[in-house]
Image (cartoon, rainbow, N blue to C red; front, side):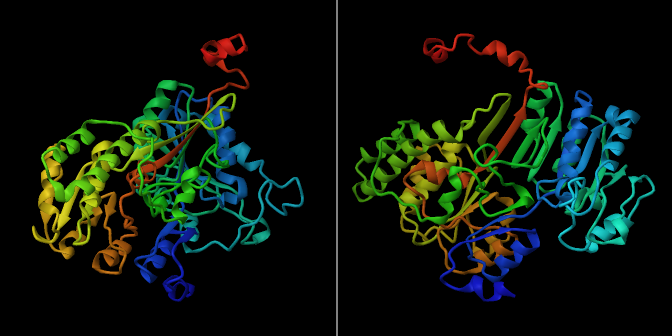
Amino acid sequence: DISEHLLKDESIQFAILTGGEDTAYKMLEANPTLALSAETGGKNATIVSKMADRDQAIKNVIHSAFSNSGQKCSATSLLVLEKEVYEDENFKKTLIDATLSLSVGDPFDFKNKIGALADKPNEKVIKAIDELKSYENYEIPASFVDDNPYLMKPSIKYGTKKGDFTHQTELFTPILSVMKAQDLDEAIEIVNSTGYGLTSALESLDEREWEYYLKRIEAGNIYINKPTTGAIVLRQPFGGIKKSAVGFGRKVGIFNYITQFVNIHQDEEDEHALKNPLSEALESLIQKGYDEHTHELKRAIFMAKSYAYHYKHEFSQAKDYVKIRGEDNLFSYIKVKSVGYRITEKDTLSDMLGVALACLISQIPLTLSIENERANKDLTFFLECLKALQANAPIVYESLQKFSEKLNAFNRVRYLKSDLDLLHEQASALGMVLATAKPCLNGRFELLYYHLERSVSISYHRYGNLGSRVLKQPTCRNSCCAEK
């Protein structure tokens, strides 16, 4: 096992994986302190609402589910249909006919749409093929060309229910499970309950449904009226959340990705600063004459200004870097739901304030954990600073063992210690990578630890017709109108 040797070498400072979550867990087991960024697959779903263009939906689903024999981590393997669509016999017939039209065989013969599997069906795939509940029905049974286990034909199973094996298990083959939802709300709940969060799609012409879906779906790459596969650099930066990612979830194909491979620090202030109530509260403490803490307070004051500036201009924005006619391709951030911070003896005052300020500015609940009141020499003054900041951050005095037992309660854990110990071992067993870098003076980099990245790609044109968007654009192309 290469992990037993290569990953434990001190010269290995970072590892990237595209593969299964089990592999990521084994890598962390081999080296619990490993800085790992892993894209670990998904159980991706397309939802078709009753407001969809059903022919367009079928076209997108067929491409998403069966291209590359379903062997893409972004491939659709769940099709969740709103009740009206599920009971639409014409929709079912068209879906089946379109699937049966796909030829399987040698990809150098251009009549074939689908080529070979990379490997023979494994135990999970065999179970998915053989297991058929009383309420399920194969509209297209799983089969192979000339009994060749590498040439699997597309199959469609109707009637799968929440919690079934094919609802929650990634198969990496051309098997599509079709599920029924009473409404869009239930459809979203079905998709989110897989535990994965890589790609997801909605087929609907109702922009109110788009908004509802985007607020509730849990996925890193989201598509509306488009296939779930085929992400393009900068247009749809790629990467998931939940079980689809191990590490900090930095997406491939966007500027933040490179930050994982460098040690970033900043010693001097820059012009990207925004005065705010938090920085003013810390400035008032300096005026009270805490001379021994002046240097650290000044550093924290700039942190507050920098974090506020970059939160306003980067982390609270949705940006379209490519601006393609007929599409919205929006890159944005979602804040993590909770942060746990284990304070160590060597954490400085500005370290502790940096974590607190990042959570306050991002409006993320923070829980502090430390051995006892004497475990850090600056703890008393830090707690006084929290009062001045009006921070509602509970502090728990507990052993490292006790804190390690509740890691699952946090979406991100800050622990400024990279040496192997109990906390790293417990985190690695949970597939969690601890954020051990000291808080950066620059909010553009520090706030990355407190946010997940999201790509949303929306096709809003109808066969080339831009609809109401045309009315929002200036008819004059001169610079005077373009600026307006």
